Structures are given as C-alpha cells and as structure tokens.
Image 1 (cartoon, rainbow, N blue to C red):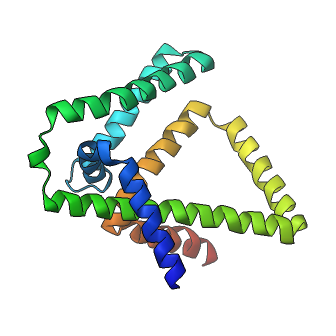
Image 2: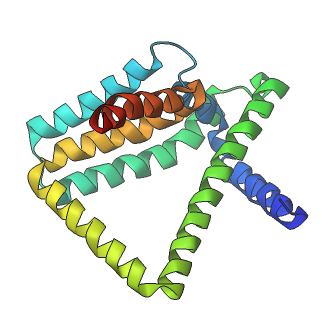
Length: 194
C-alpha cells in the first residue's frame, strides 16, 4: 500500500467520522449489535427484521405507500436522533475508550466504502476494456435475477437479503463466515464431486 493510498484512507475516515459525530451515541450500540458482542444479538436482528416484514406482509401496503413510509421514518430519525442525543446524552459520558471504538467503527466503515468504490471502478474498467465480457456477464446475471424474482416471492427475497446484509458483519467479526464457506464447500461441493 502506497503512502498516497494510506493518506486517502485516513482522509476518508476522518470525513466519515465528522459526518457521524452527532450519531456517535447511537452508532456504538448499533455496532455492538451488528458485531454480535452478546450471544442474543443475532436473534434480536432476525426478530426485528421478521417483525417488520410480518407487519408489511399483513398490511400489504402499496409500493408507493411503503416507499413513502420508509422515507418518512428515515427523515424523522435523521431529524430527531441528533436532537435527542444532545438532550439525553451527557457530553462528559463520552470517554476515550468510546472515542477509540468510534474511530475503529469509522475505519471499518470507511474501508468497506472504499472497497465498494474500488469494485465499482474495476467493473467500470472491465466495461471500458472488455465490453463483450461485461455485457455478456451483465445480461446473464440480469436474466438469472429476473428468473429468481419471478420464481420466489419478492417480499421473501427482500427479507432474506435484509437478514443476510445485517448478519454479515457479525459473521465476519466472529469468524463464522469462513466456517460457513468451508462447511458449504465440504458438504455441498465435495459431496457432488464424489
């Protein structure tokens, strides 16, 4: 890694930390839950997601209504969280240990964002350098996704995707992602080869 890349990563992390300053009292507990620091955190994640999706399933709102309600909730949270944290949380309760944890969270989030940007840039490079491969792969994946979307209920697909996205940080943090990949390889691929 060159010095320029290190400086760029550090700059990106500091910008992200500055943007998240008013959310810092919320970010640390959320990070704790996403990284499964307690054994019941995965159950909490799946339980909350299940409750939300069951409510959506029971109410069957129209797409526009669902989008409007989600955006309304995001707007209210964005408006109320900084106000409530400034009122409810004491500035003296913020310790050096919490600051270190916030910096660690910002570094991890920044690294993930930069990795996604690098992936997007490499896909753009493939599109420019090898358009035949890019368009063939794009068409193949879009046909596959269209078939999956037509075969499986969209709400169920979204439920599975949300759970996978929210459980992935905990799997990575606990080292269970490698275990799951090894288990899948041993039991699915090796079984078919032998």
